Amino acid sequence: MLGVIERQGALQIDSVNVLARAHYVPLFSRLGPYDMALLDRLAFRDRRLFEFWAHEACLLPVELWPYSQWRMQREALNHWFVEMYDAHGPYIERVYDEVVDRGALAASELSEPGERGGSWWGWGAGKRALEYLFRVGRLTVADRRNFERVYDLPSRVLSSSVLSAPVPSENDARRFLLWRAAQALGVFTLADVCDYWRMRVGAGKAPFMELVEAGDVVPVSVEGWPSSGRAADRAYVVRDVVVPRRSRAAGGAGGAGALLSPFDPLLWDRKRTLRVFGFHYRIEIYVPADRREYGYYVLPFLLGDRFVARVDLKADRAAGVLRVQGAWSEPGTGALLPDVAAALGDELLLVADWLGLSGGVTVTRRGDLAHPALYRYLSTRGA
Figure 1 (spheres, rainbow, N blue to C red):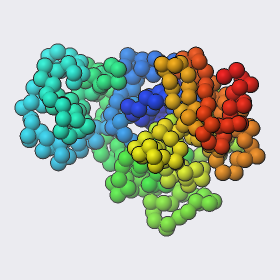
Figure 2: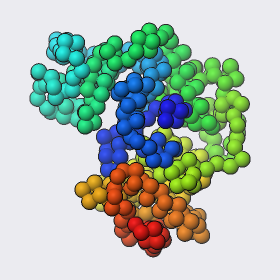
Figure 3: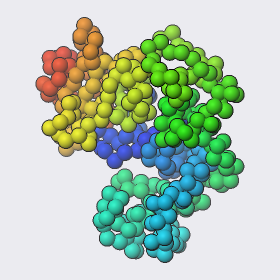
Figure 4: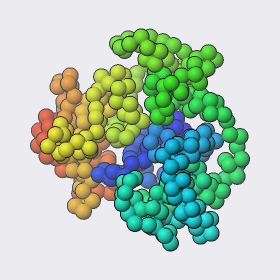
């Protein structure tokens, strides 16, 4: 698990729990069924991970703590946070002092939580104060209870070796993070590695070019990749890259395929996903129901090195079943439909078992792959 997280650099966290929380699914996609409590243990007991903003809110290896300090320092200077502190500084300091005195606290446990409403998703004043302190690095996340953040002092959460590690300059930190993104992506553009950490291309260009000049990343041409002629769109690979003779998804279904969360690092940059795989994807959570093309929570299915299908899933925990609310094949997979249905069916059964849905998998008729191919295959498996 740590190997996967270290190679990816980050696991994105999201509140949507239609199937499973976003940070749990990428490990299943790569390792197959695992005990999700192990990830919680790595983060909140063994302290091998910490939570902060990277691509979005993410779990990160603790080795990246020193390389996150520049972002915390920038947040403290952000005009929005400066205005917030100017307006509410005494209250923010009272919240901080309460954490110092009482120990790890969630917003709901503050003595002065404040009324909900206003900006920041309707949060109360206490939650906004805690988030400010978290974003500027004065507090960190000590735990999550029913997904609610619990905040404490970094000195009471992280080891002394992590906290005492040398803090690099902003340029050096950016260069290191871009190098980690390059290793995670394998083949990439400057825009790709910058987006990995939500870094502006203008800010990332100089440290990235230092990697080029050092020979850590090497410019290449990639057949079929469009090029605008801009430096941000030029292709690179990591030094001494090993190109496999063939590629296959890790997945749970005997290594054949893998379902990917909409928040998987492979899908973070939709433009790159289209450029590399010829696969157009968008998440439709925020699209009105009557305008959705596929569904609320649609997971792409990777078979070998091709995206061959997408499936709208819901873990119906009350009924104990995994509901396939739609399944579609991708263009060019028509002749492979039975094989796609079999590989996807095996993966869905594995997902249901992993999530403890003892009722198995149910399939609607929505989508060309759902019926009869997927429905028929799952019927033969007793689902």
